[in-house]
Image (cartoon, rainbow, N blue to C red; front, side, top):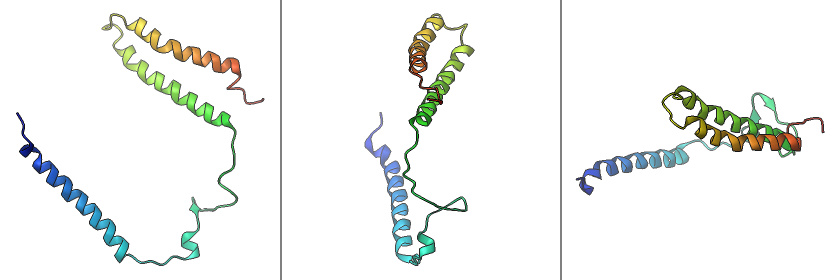
Length: 120
């Protein structure tokens, strides 16, 4: 049976870590140099100067393709342990069918709606 006295060491360690983080953040804020120049405040990415607005709209098909890729990639990840332990599972085929059927229905729906056609 554990009591609250058993957790006092964890609590003290948490306080020491949080205190260290707080002291470092505050001390660097007050002790660090504060020279803000136009060159320091300019946005910089990969050695290329920024041009134009970053908030331009883009086609939603890029987002749909990315979500579909993630969805079917995760599906394959879940299928791997099932394939490895297929002989040990009693109802493995039925369970995997119940897992894949809704995803297959969604995929057929997306194809019929033309979600993957880029020439529209």
